[in-house]
Image (cartoon, rainbow, N blue to C red; front, side, top):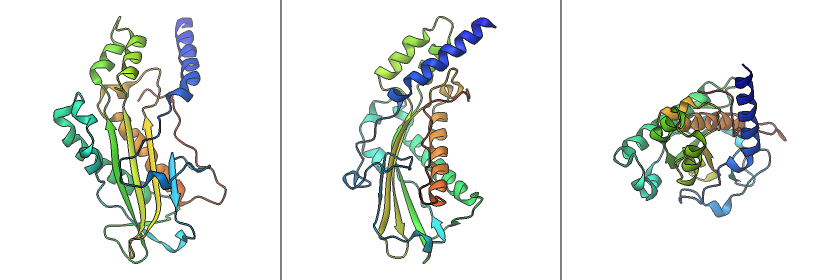
Length: 243
């Protein structure tokens, strides 16, 4: 029992001390939105944000979330050297569908019912265009090695970091007036998998990515309901949950 407590305490110490360095660096941008127009805004969880001055969002009653775009992923070259190179196109489509479904569900289940989720844009609707711009799966082989007896967990984690094998996801988004097509807001964020003492999510390709996307959806619902001056916390860099 003492050994378990020591291990947990040490793990927590490493997690807390490493949080600042383990936050994902902002994306340089994939071209879906203008990164030069955006900046970090206090009280919001996303790395880059822009709002059109003078926009009255209260007049919009519904939200249309079209199919999530993946064309900027396909234009990138990093995935062609990925260990899942032969499956990445199918992975993109699967995760894009997951993201669309997750965002629609989050808004539909909003207890404050800020927006009605619609299947076609209308006069009183916002069109929320989302684009996946980075999608790095977990390296399951490395994860198995990390937790194997004498697998050298620390060495594996260092290798994972050095080779860029950590699971990351990035998105860019536009909020538009459905009637006029005017862009009213833009967002961009990039997140890396959470730190865990024991990481069961590492044994599947996209469990980390799904977790990040789910948190983004929840954050956007909070943004829709945000009161003046309210702070929406960003995603934590670590969690005690192993799954």
